[in-house]
Image (cartoon, rainbow over all chains, first blue to last red):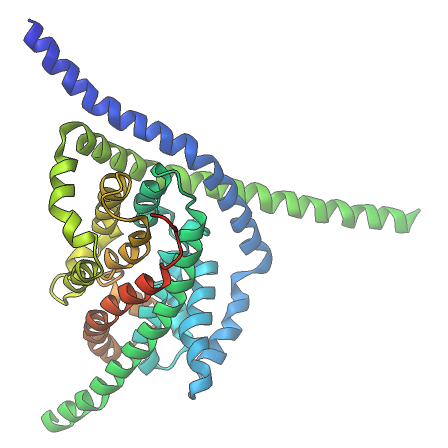
Amino acid sequence: MDFLVTIATGFIGLFQAGADTFVSLVTGIVPLLIILLTAVNALIAWIGPERINGVGKWAARDGLVYYPIRYVVFPFLSVFFLTNPMAYTMGQFLPEKYKPAFYDAAVSYVHPPLGIFPHINPGELFVWLGIATGIQKLGLPIVPLAVRYLLIGLVVIFIRGIVTERITMWMWPRENEDTAVTA
Amino acid sequence: MHTINTWLMQFGRAVGGIVGVLYQAGRDSVDQVIVNILPFMAFIALIIGIIVKTGIGKIIAAAVAPLAGSLIGLIIISFIAALPILSPLLGPGAVVAQVVGTILGTTLIASGKISARYALPALFAIDAQVGCDFIPVGLALGEAEQQTVEIGVPAVLYSRVITGPIAVILAYLASFGLYPGY
């Protein structure tokens, strides 16, 4: 009988540990999250997401100067205002050859801002929060990490946009030759 | 009198508009929390509970610590996650990235087995596959033509093999001075 009780205590203890974690997540994160989401949702409603369409026409232009707009500013604004997954619809403003690189840049930016702008992808919050929880347990502030994650993310999507655009360009004419030969 | 009435009406409408937007924003945010966030918190809390209580965490920590606690190890993780065969499989819902991140955070970083400054490169290492499962849909949302999708899918997948490790190196360089003393 004692043996059964020991097993049962261990069994319940397993879930009690989970429940304690759940309570600390809900009381520690959810209130701030709800207020932050409310503020950003209202802000987006007031500004109106359709305003970034103009940036899209700008981002579509050729030329080196427009690279940072196409792969930093435009993905950032798309992700911020339209969030995951509607941000990718902004690719419609770009020529076909830039669409894969834009998608790569935009999709790579749905996690880096999560520490400060969780509205972008609330369903995938733990990509950020899992590691941030560890930092918190050490008694360290997580905001410095959140800010660097957000900023380095911008550099990363810029590089990703350029590299993917290069690779797309590489494959583009070859693919056309193939179809020309078979035709 | 008439002008005051018009003014009052306009004022009332403006206030009503602001309150309406804020209220709707509040409703949306509570919806998001209930639909997207709370279920995942329950899932993660269960995993953390099991990992912490059963001691699996210590085994995983011992196995992964050498890999996740060095720049080379993190580059290897990002490279593996970005392999064009694996990346589309690891992508969906970012579940893999979220679970791996939680394990790294709650076991290795929290216990100090990995230095806190590795948190930044680790965030990029576990996420090299982000969106690789979604490329055709993402491109379709951008109204891409069939040919663009055919080229775009491999282009993004190949690009990740290069940019995944680059992201980790950049994050590593940017992590200097993040948590001095850790």
